Image 1 (cartoon, rainbow, N blue to C red):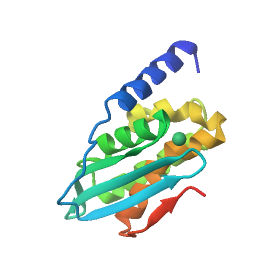
Image 2 (spheres, rainbow, N blue to C red):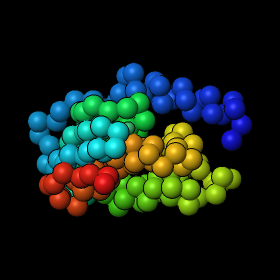
Image 3 (cartoon, rainbow, N blue to C red):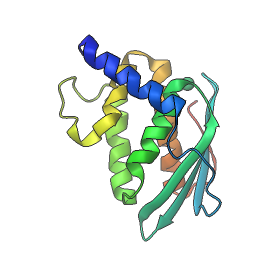
Image 4 (cartoon, rainbow, N blue to C red):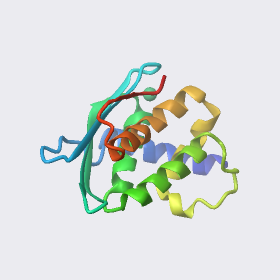
Length: 151
Ligand code: ZN
């Protein structure tokens, strides 16, 4: 990855950390779950309104490092309006991206801004930070009302 791109990616992460999107509680949530990453201290609550298999609304609240917070913010932005199947496919792609299962020059057009987390693959602890929101989403979609932990 060239340094210009890396810089741009850092800006996206900093921006979403500073002003996270969809950062609130949804009182009308039909699904909810909680995620914890004890290694880093990240902790988040995820709220979803699912209707006819579509994520009508999604939000989160919590505390954590810049990576976990910006990842949750981007995740909620991307998943809103998608079907649960589409959300699961995105989860799969994101997981492959941060664990390095996608090659460096793989086509990333359909993951959009999620590509900013490509760099975390070099830092196993950060992979957990970046994935936390997605694992929590996965649990919420499966209606597993439990606490997800990265351990
Ligand atoms: Zn973290």
